[in-house]
Amino acid sequence: MSKSDRNMQQQRETPKQSLYATRVRIYPRTVHGRVRTAKWAILIACLAVYYILPWIRWHRGQGQPDQAVLLDISAERFYFFGLELWPQDMWVLAGLMIMGAVTLFLVTSIVGRVWCGYACPQTVWTDLFMWVERAIEGDRAERMARDAAPLTADTIWKKALKHWIWLGIAFWTGGAWIMYFTDAPTVVVDFWTLQAPMPVYFFTGLFTLTTYLLAGWAREQVCTYMCPWPRFQSAMLDDQSITVTYQAWRGEPRRRGRNRGPSQDMAGSQAKAGDCVDCGVCVQACPTGIDIRDGIQLECINCGLCMDACDTVMKRINRPTGLITWDTLAGQKAKEAGRHEALKLFRARTMIYVGVLSLAAVVLLGSLVGRATVNLSVQRDRAPLFVRAPDGSLRNGFTVKVVNKAALNRVFNLRIEGLPGAKLANASGNAQPETTLPILAPADQVETVRVLVTARPARLEDGSIPVTFVLRDTASGVETVYHSIFMGPPGYGAGPQAGTHP
Image 1 (cartoon, rainbow, N blue to C red):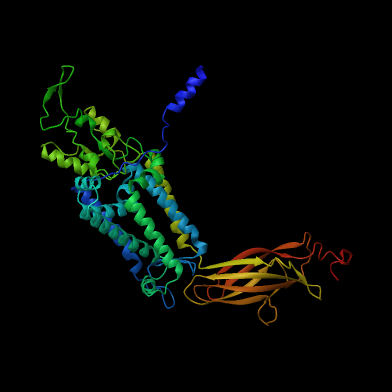
Image 2 (image 1 turned 180 degrees about the vertical axis):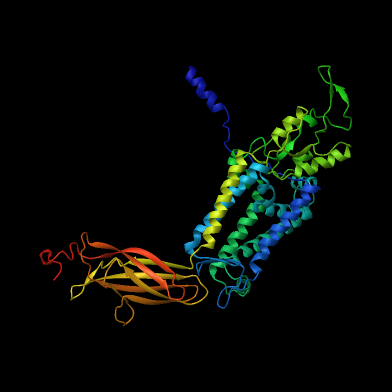
């Protein structure tokens, strides 16, 4: 057999390595302590805000929605208490999203992934689902034994009850999300009386399904594989970032039992045991199933539940708590060397984030304060581009849109500059063309008017001339402008020899 034949045979005999790892199911154990208490408080606060916010009322005047937070897609409005945003104000939402991203960068650079561990929706709802699971099926050991044993009637009814409660929570989660897009009391009544539009039922079902799957089944898989944040969080951290840290200088070498005195190792030397008893409760408490003693890892969400688990064991063996604690890498190195390292919150990285965040906040706030309550847009007719009247004048058609963001009716006068002698007329009216055109804009609405502009331009070199539409508020005198062009045949106004002006 040739060498190549032997290589091919070896390749056929060698089992292929799978590119996908089989999921190892995680059974987090119950822990008690300061961290767990803080997580419960934040979880309750987040859920309360999410479920209650659509029901808060905010009076905006007659004919206006009274829901405090409402994204009204049909009316093209976003209401947030006293703030009302139009489609033209989407830059505000873009600015808020940028500020949110920079804030997340800043928080991560200071205290690691606390957002992931405490306030991320995936963490909040997964925590809630796991609490239901523990209440019905028991703690870690009982759940593991139940899943390893054959199915029994007790297992079936408990798992069925658990999943029904999960679906109930997911349903109310999906329903609450719909309430942010339509009036909450109205949609609840319409939903249960079968009067709601089909999209309401569809999206309620969609969000119910995604909540049930992500919080009940996927759990830590979302944080590890689906979420992009762990992939680039390392770019936000440095040796001064506060993270959940195992104090190896104090915990090593590990030894089981209460006796922490010197013992003889295999080499015959005497070594005093560290505080870590290698009990593994820190791993059992971790919702992502990692061992924090291996250092900072992609899967770690900085929740700190391993701290509570470890502190419980340290108290039992009469050792100081804080073997797993919040600390920086620089602080750990300093403690290992027997010195103190001061915490440096103000460093180049954090100051850059604070500077960018402050600048964005000032610009956004200034833009909101100076935001105009009226917008003007003008669109030329594309066909025909112009019309020649029997008297030789030219007429162009324009669609004028006046956005009145105020809560009262307003009267405007529209005129055109850059085109001497031009007259304006409402295409849907019978009034004679005038140099100014009155426009009534109802409160909180968009008034659309088709305007006909008639003029005799002195000269059109290339078939167009720049013009400016000026919209003047008759009450305040404030003017809003929009730049456009008036079109005609090239060479218009050059004289009879051009053959364009009788």
